[in-house]
Length: 162
Image (cartoon, rainbow, N blue to C red; front, side):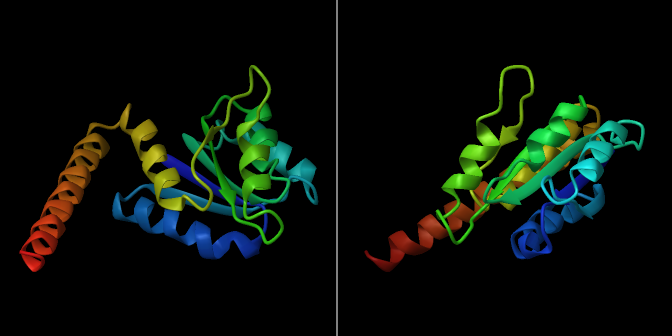
């Protein structure tokens, strides 16, 4: 199982790195690229066209401002694309979010929260787990551990104010 993480600019790296951490934790083979929908549109289209042939099973497309990267890639492939809107200085990421989520009928891009790199990776893992039982087991364990951590924090906070 292979994921690709594509960012529109290296300035997105500080957010995108958080998705790598999660994918690495789950031992998902990951390809990382910098491809701009606007500055290298041919390369973006080519990446999308070749994704399935290149063995990519899911794509995370991170972009800010006029965030069309997920859309251009999704238009070129049937591989699931997860849009990761990046917060920009202009409109606090709302421009990125709306550019990513407002796809026309027939070309969906699943979209996570602005700067939601961890959730983008977890959604990619959920998609991959449909074909990989080991990932499904790891994901269930991850959620159990998350629940245990919250219960621990609940107990600590409750006891602090008793």
